[in-house]
Amino acid sequence: MRGSRQTFFNLFCILWLPILLKAASSSPLPRGNDPPTASLSSGLYKGHTCVGCVLVVSVIEQLAQWHNSTVKAAMERLCNYIPEKLQGFCYVLAELYGPHIAELIDREMNADVVCHSLKLCKEDPGQPLCHLYAPPKVGLSAAIKKAKSIMKTSKDLKSFMGFSSVCAFPLLANLCEKIKYVMRNKLPFEDFDGDKFSTFPTLRGYHWRGRDCNDKNTTVYPGRRPDNWDVKSDSNCNGIWGVDPKDGIPYEEKFCKGADSQGVVLLGDSAGAHFHIPPEWMTVTQMSAKSFANLPMAFTDELDWPQFSEITGFLNSTIGGWTDSLYLRLRRRNRCNHRDLQNISQNGGSSGNLLYLIKSLARNQLLDNPAIVIYATIGNDVCNGNRDTLAHMTTPKEMVSNVMQALRYLDSHLPNSSHVILTGLVDGRFLWDNLHDRYHPLGQLNRDITYSQIYSFLDCLQVSPCSGWLTPNETLRNLTSERALQLSNVLKEIARSEKFANFDIFYMDFPLRQTAEEWHKMGGEPWQLIEPVDGFHPSQIAAALGTRITWQKALHEWPQVLGRENPFNDQIEAIFKDQGGH
Ligand SMILES: *[C@@H]1O[C@H](CO)[C@@H](O)[C@H](O)[C@H]1NC(C)=O
Ligand SMILES: *[C@@H]1O[C@H](CO)[C@@H](O)[C@H](O)[C@H]1NC(C)=O
Ligand SMILES: *[C@@H]1O[C@H](CO)[C@@H](O)[C@H](O)[C@H]1NC(C)=O
Ligand SMILES: *[C@@H]1O[C@H](CO)[C@@H](O)[C@H](O)[C@H]1NC(C)=O
Ligand SMILES: *[C@@H]1O[C@H](CO)[C@@H](O)[C@H](O)[C@H]1NC(C)=O
Ligand SMILES: *[C@@H]1O[C@H](CO)[C@@H](O)[C@H](O)[C@H]1NC(C)=O
Ligand SMILES: *[C@@H]1O[C@H](CO)[C@@H](O)[C@H](O)[C@H]1NC(C)=O
Image (cartoon, rainbow, N blue to C red; front, side, top):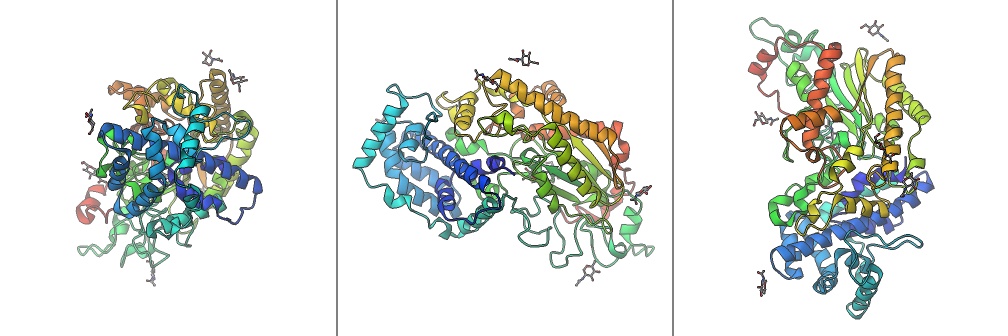
């Protein structure tokens, strides 16, 4: 796995916590197994530190402007908005960086200049100076030089650059550990404890897989076939158990026997995991304490919102749009499927690193129900932030090998009669075409930052989520799409020609075109299908519409995948209500 695959996750870890990663990355972390990744990722953290700094300084600057206040007051305002647990940290940051930031902003230096002079953005020898805003009239280098000379005369910066006790803050200590763990192992937040299902929402808990209904008993979990028809207790957590007093037949047997019960598993990337950075975090005109209420949860879920996602979503969306998911539809079709979901996706997931991620799949071939597995790595095989991005894309040959390895693993872990649906890669030209000249949330107040500027800034820092598509170079965008199409064709061919013992296999194109058509019919605009902050991921609306399209396709072309409609659904609902919730 390459360090660049961590991009989506890191971007935000650092937004509000620039120092945290600075502390983490400069501490002598045990090295992973492959040294190249280590050096690559230190470059990445540098890039993310710069992005985080520029974003935060921009927000402070705009808050001061909007409220006609001093920069100091704007910083205090921002810290007040942030949830209490993180406030202490915010005030420490404000204390450390505040005076310098205030002094520079008061002299009308923009965020680029401020961050370069604070050394949170660094210039690599032989590389261009990266900047988000149009350079100041005197030129960027000159402005930075001037800012640095102002700083020299004020308090010594070094005294707090060595700051590394961040992890002493109670909430952050936990996060620090997780982040270090991820950096060290290049792995998702999985497997801290052996038991994979949990009653805890975040940190890969039940937002990610069906909630456990008895965390103390490892033989109780969603997706297993019921133990003795769940006469005494609910062994599969679908909320159905006990015996009908009228006839002495266990409910699970009565309602679920022969019902084709099956789970939903997503093997995917940040799109599947539903990466989302709330635009409220950087839109000063509407900013309030409410805007940040979800900050701690968002961090502990790696800025993903699997609970609202296209395949495994199960809660009503609180981030715009609405929730529709394959899981919810399968559950509606057969309520015995309640809670049988697993979201095995990771920000940066690609055909290559899924081979690690897949090991966290929890399915017992002998004891569990079959599953529908959606294999959806829709972009990372062609998306990376490298300067020679084309050279770092997965080749068709590598794709065949990666996908076949994953499928063989599934064949040895999925119960018989499972199904696998391979989803093709997206055509990411949609992104540039619909966004490049629009204003980014950060640029809406002063109409000064377009997506094209954001993309170039990230590209310059080599932290672009996709240098091949998020670029003004049309030839490069076309070449990236060409490769994506080749890789989709690999998937299509595998679905056509390969046979497996324990599942049948299907292919579908990523339904972007149909999604855009549907949304157009509903009166929407194409740009609303893209995440506003990162300008890269599918939005909540796109996810929900995509579910409907996928479902219709399966219903018409592969009805055997979805199983029968359970005639007892109404009775299950009448007796078991919401079946213990999610
Ligand atoms: C902003 O505040 C200053 C000083 O408090 C005042 O002189 C100025 O008129 C205010 N500007 C606006 C646009 O409210
Ligand atoms: C754990 O759950 C299984 C299945 O329901 C049950 O047979 C077993 O007795 C339980 N074990 C304990 C220690 O409760
Ligand atoms: C899977 O997890 C990812 C990562 O959080 C999340 O973004 C996505 O929405 C989840 N997918 C489903 C279908 O729950
Ligand atoms: C979502 O909202 C709808 C309508 O407001 C409600 O009927 C439904 O129960 C909610 N679903 C969940 C999972 O909360
Ligand atoms: C799986 O089930 C099918 C029928 O449902 C059967 O034909 C096949 O032999 C089974 N495969 C294995 C590996 O048991
Ligand atoms: C890119 O592809 C589009 C669509 O296939 C084509 O119309 C356009 O001419 C291509 N542009 C370049 C620069 O290759
Ligand atoms: C656009 O990208 C292609 C392919 O990487 C490259 O050969 C070409 O030089 C680039 N054009 C410009 C103007 O940078």
